[in-house]
Image (tube, rainbow over all chains, first blue to last red; front, side, top):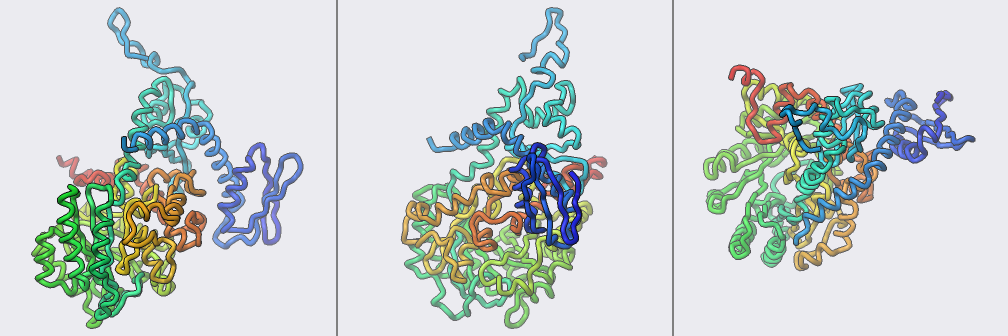
Length: 100
Length: 506
């Protein structure tokens, strides 16, 4: 995923098949108080992520952003794989604590 | 697979007991990376157990590439991060642990804060209430309101109730304290509830009559010591500029009358405090306190007006905290027992499933569920911070009036809104946070900062502070044999701390 440097901004392109859109959007939200972030759809399930007005003291933003998208995507997958167990656990635990 | 032996009497090999090489499921967990430990991933499961993995092993775990014969596999299974043929043992354990963590919900609010007066003789810049002159008696709780407060407190289903009297300067409303204490004790006998009384006061104007009353009813006293005299008096100005001296004298008199352990102190940290963590802690040691609670300033109510002058960022607070904790560890290694309460609370949440009683860090929120506040004017508030917001005209967290029953108060639209925003596991930014099993929801703080009860984790001071604290504590726990990790663990379990040196000597 190449960096596409601009004058007062930086941008990366990501593949939705590698970095799911939901993870991309969540990461964009998380980083949106550090920079202005634009998500622009490109052909073939690709997206351009442009960072502008980057707050000083936020170096390596593109790299950090990429890493964060991957982590979010992994967490989403873990959540999906364990959803049934988690939901059942919470229900069972709270049900047992209700007064009988 | 049950433990069996072959006919010859020899045990089967270890692999005979495993469900299959890579045939495992993941149990629910979240993960994060600590800035101070690159290359490692911290996993925390739904019931609060944790594990550190190398990056590569984390990938293997998620891709079902761990082999059942590996030590790592056995470790993660024992800590309930993966489920295999032995999963039947997981279920009752996990349910029990989760229920224990959330058990405080069923007890009802156990902490009841009663604001008997707004009158005060101090002018602390960080005060969050609209303190009134000592002679302004119209800001005292009326006897009639107090009678209703008794009704409300005893409606709580909790069997053990802590009643904390606050102000202003609560001792200026001593007659109301007396009325409430007598009434609560008389009626609690019939209901079988156990009561614990606390008075929050500067102790500057403590009288013998008051001490005698407190001794009779087994009160605890909570006061403020902001650090050495020069810092305390700067933070807490009053006529005579001798707040520290009077407070210390009050502490000594209270200890003589009620016992050494009956008096506790809290520190309020202002910008002036940040450069002097060691001096603040040394003051607490010199005054004989076994613990110090290092919490940052909050900017509720009237404190907002002075926050620009005396406030600081969470990053600045965490820098102060690092120095303070380092000093506390050094003191303990030198044989001076002093505990940092914030760390102790967080460590207890990390290492045990048990309630800490700290209503400011719980999910569901401690506001309303863990504590209720009865203001001098008869309003009932979900938290002390909610009451402070009311002092500047924001009644978002006013549940109702003391004349309304508990059922009415908890059925109010305000109560419902707090509950909806009060479960961290369902909040954006929290639901996938590795620290959520230990953390809490802060609808009052969210509202004060962002205008919404749900809040914005990007800018939440509650989030940045607790993330920073958890990162620091886990960085220590990653080195479990270190003195700091041993000390933190001792605090979690309420056990004496033995340095590695002590243990070697023994």
